[in-house]
Amino acid sequence: MRSDQANEKNQGTGRRAILGAAVFGASGAVLGLPGAAEAAEARTAGQGGRGLKSLPVPTIIGHRGTSGYRPEHTFGSYNLALDLGADVVEAGDLVPTKDGHLVCRHEPEIGGTTDVASHPEFADRKTTKMLDGVATTGWFTEDFTLAELKTLRAVERIPANRPHNTLYNGRWEIPTFEEVLKWQDEQTRKRGKQVWIYPETKHPTYFRGLGLGLEERVAKLLRKYGKDGRNSPVILQSFEPSSIQKLNQLVDNPLVVLLSSADSRPYDFVEAGDPRTVADLITPKGLREIAGYAQGIGPTLDLIIPKNADGTLAKPSTLVSDAHKVGLVLHPYTMRNENPFLPAEYRKGGAADAYGDSFGAFKTYFATGIDGVFTDNADTGLLARADFLAG
Image (cartoon, rainbow, N blue to C red):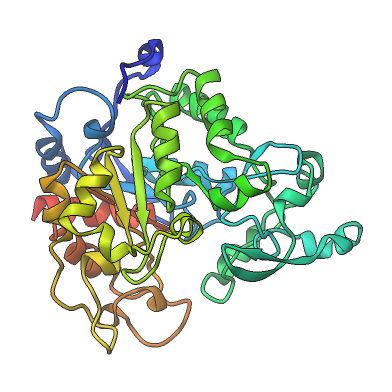
């Protein structure tokens, strides 16, 4: 990576989670954890410096905010993630508008995350497109101007698992990435500690083909707000290695390559005719290659501990130690409290919206040596980390 930019003066202090003061539970109650605080301080002591390695380990990353409790990628979700104590907020998944603005949506298709279907003025925008080789029907951000998207409101994406989140349908609009960068600064000042964010470039090859390249737009905004340095509190991620390689040429931010199932191929590989799969990327050779342009990987949890045919956890893989050998951090995804998302042995009953033993699952994953984890339930993750570090 190249030399730091002058924006290092903006980095601030307080990169570690303050577990000893209070950790907010889902109900808003405050739980004192002095013993866990000492353990967390011990775990982070001696790391020194700033940047990615200054974060507590294991890092609790609020997945799309705190999407276990609020509709994802809204300021309601982002703010609650901070209230609950998340070390980093994944704000957000970046997709472009027709007029070139970056907005935060899990996917460019927004039929499942907004109320667009109830807007008759946009009925004719519904269409079917090939998105990374998959026929996808709905409404797409690239067919709307920012002004048009701002007339929509966010809704819960998986109401069958999170019926309580539907209470908040319609309350928040779609945020832009520029609004998120301003929010980050405002919240850093308000809370007296540096707020970290973890945006992702979504489907970059697809959008590059539409003339809506993501990396240049991301870099331009990061430079505008002085957040393009090696120690900047903005970690960038993508499922397409070439997107991370492009960002590596444009900014000095910490970079992370996301990794899906072992038999999958990043779509930029598909387009380029590269026959490699994720299985090739997680070999020692593949990890050394990634370490040449990125600081970390974000594997699916199944790459850390595979599952047996019955959905229970099998023996952990060697991915954690292999990645650490080449200096890469690991931030796997995604821990969720609800039964369907947990390994079979941690489920309680069969209800789709009921919580299982997520604390037990967190402990098992933490024991592999991962450096952090994406979770929809930041409060659960923080309590699980406190238990693990104190234990």
